[in-house]
Image (cartoon, rainbow, N blue to C red; front, side, top):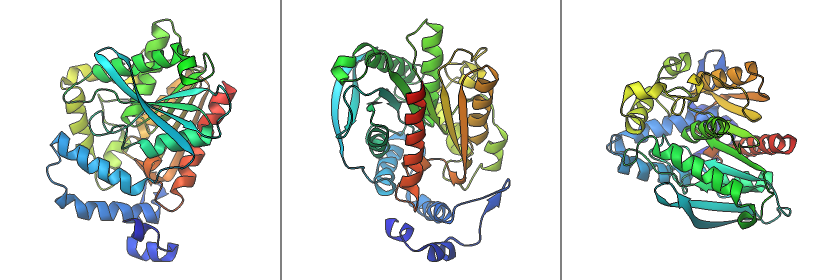
Length: 335
């Protein structure tokens, strides 16, 4: 896969086939080739309803499509969690200044298949580009630990980082949150929950193609229901694992877009992908924040699919990821 994606642009274009256009956007040819290769491998992927098998496949794929950034030190440690020991991985650039801000990062994977290792490359890039101390959280996963376990762990990890700047050698009071997909959902929920509890709250939040509404299907779910890596069937399966009771999916702690009040939240940057089923609910959340007076920036990478933040092996992939990280750093610096 890496060899194919490293071929010259014209060759990639021929291998990818006729351009795919939808909703006024054209899919990047390298992404199109990646999607094609993934679809061909899917019959060999085994039982997609088995969480343990899907975790194995996700871990292998992440190692293929995301190289590790150099110049970043990482150490695993245990912090207190609501169910006992909670593991986090702390990243720091070797070039980081004294007492940088901290970013508590929540990995994606549908609350089921992601972990610290699947998102290690993305967390390293975030630390290297922003210079922040990045605390990646190994929150409890469904179906073994369904909602609200992940939310409880996410809030606990943020509070620990906020209360322990000396242990992180970070700037006191300067803690942001960030996450992708399911992790973006958790970052949004942490911001709402800490606001409702009277703080302290994150100084900024970065939401990369976040899941914001598990109770309804947006237009982009219909547009990109199949054929673009993340499918509607995947979304339905993840939702069943994480929140088995459909009636509970309307709660703001599950679907932050459905919160009655989104004012008073920290400065926010939302990134989405043009060919992603979650595109429209990410945009809808950014619009609600802006309408409520929250400082909000929104950017859609029109030619990308869900997962681009972990696809550094694609042509231009590392540059895209670095751009997102720089924008997150700018958001924190301005907070």
